[in-house]
Amino acid sequence: MTQSAETALQRIANYISRTPIKPGAQSLGFVRAALTDIYGCMLAGAGQPVARNTRQALINCGQINEHAHARIYGTTCHATPGAAAMANAVAGHALEFDDWEVPGNTHISVLLFPAILAASCDRALSGQDAIAAYLAGYETIARIGEAINLEHYEQGWHATATIGTIGVAASVSRLMGLDGEQTANALAIATSRALGYNAQFGSEAKPLQVGFAVEGGLVAAHLAATGLTGQPHMLEHATGMVALMGHRFSDRIETAMARIGQAPAIDHYHIVFKPWPSCGYTHRIMTGMLELRSRGIDPAAIDQLELHLPDLHAGILPFRHPKNRSEALFSLPYCAATILLRGDMTVADLDNQGWRDEDIRQLIDKTSVTGFAPNRPELNYDPEQPDRVVATMGDAIHAVNIPYPLGSPQKPMSENRHFRKFQMNTGLDETRAQALWERLGTWPSAANIHDLLVMSPGSD
Image (cartoon, rainbow, N blue to C red; front, side, top):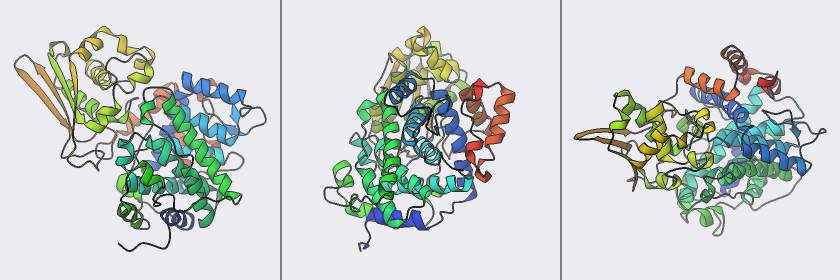
């Protein structure tokens, strides 16, 4: 395969800095929904212990202070841009309620929007500028994801904290108007901040890793803007990021980079929204539990409940009987039992420590989780090899195959479900939530998004 004279990072940088990315109307609808969704997640997460303690640490470091300008949503606090981006990202990811995308396997909007909002804290941020910055970050994350995943994720790297850092640098570079050379340096510098481990899942370090990524990517762009440089070959070099954190197949990198300038990545992959506050890898099974519940079966009559999913996904969900909220977000038996018994899973279930409920504990005891080897391991979700739920009740067997989760582009959430999630996250009554919802819906055409986002809507 003929190699370009440009390195991979240079090809990405030159494209996102020089070319208007023009996705289709459906993709722009996904981006429009993404800001409202992550704003709600930041508001809901701001009250979580990990977010409160993060803010206290930033106060102790002097980065939250009365002279700063960047907003921390869900609070009355202002901070330096990097600190605000970090605090909002930690809050937005605290409940595992935020959206994600497939090729990079990252939580895309909790990476990009906190950085875009913080980086523009001292000026007006138009909807069009925000969209351009978001699409630059999405394109970067998707193409690097195509080049490195899923080997990268399987090796134990937290892609939101690794690939995501580079995507943030891309978004902020675009927002700052950096040229191709500066942007390439920003992406190269960001690779040196790209760190996070799946082994931290089930602890408060997971949302902290996302906060570190957002702060790191923002700082990388500002460093590059001063003229600081990095090696542009950090993806394809023999000891670069892909080789050390993924695989050594250089043709994979070239294939991914060759897609740049064709259809925008977001037109192909879109965004996956979450109907429930838990790891996205629980959501195919949870979708299947809704189907099982609709059949009117009596959960108490279940003798055995079998949950089958790809072994990579199963490995990310190691907790059987969770002991706390962080573990509950990564407990497939708990999430499945909650849907079957309650018909939904909400932030209130987590607040009430639903994993302690006796009927849920009894159903968990009847539940087994089995991972299978995927036939096409390069796919995050293979519709030809769906997740599977099997409930045995005496001589009767009820089975459900689930190719896609609720909230995916193939099985989208309804507009009403999006709104109900937003209302729950904001804590507002229906009338006030509807008014804010409609106001935020105008953001793509707004002259200044900062005027639309209320710092703490429940306190006025």
